[in-house]
Image 1 (tube, helix red, strand yellow):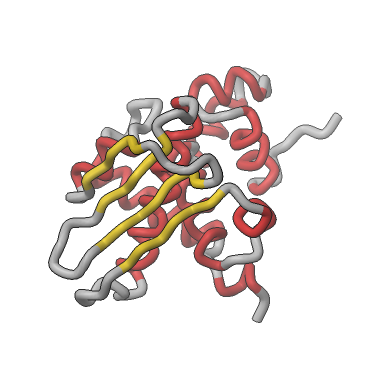
Image 2: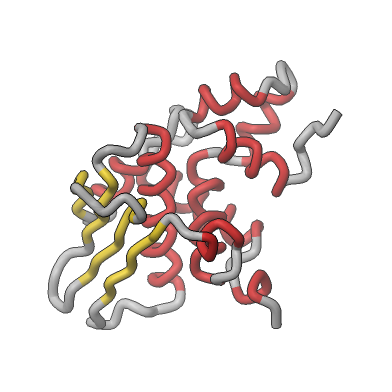
Length: 176
């Protein structure tokens, strides 16, 4: 089984993200706020002075509430995606039943491993984050009016590279 096969499929990530968005966010309100969703899920979300090579961290101590730490100096759109990504770790672990009073320290470093898609959990978290922030149905609706990637990124309040990656993964990237 390949690394990608061990990760959430795009369809599974879409389903999980839609469930979370329907339960903890207003379906038609954009941009989606991952901090509000995390707070609704009982996660404490804080900005922290993290090392430059750390984008975010998900922490869960035995008997304690989960915490997401975001790099305080990252641009807002980057922090939004990082927060959604860390929520993906949380939801993915819940789905697999991996929260039975175990301690979890997960740090997302800005590294080649996280960006090249070699870790199933990182792939799953990123797929979830993309689906949460940029739902496929809304992308299709917006593409009826314009395929301007900058306008789409601005609408969803994500980086152009995140928008490009999402469109590509959905087979919607216009490579003219």
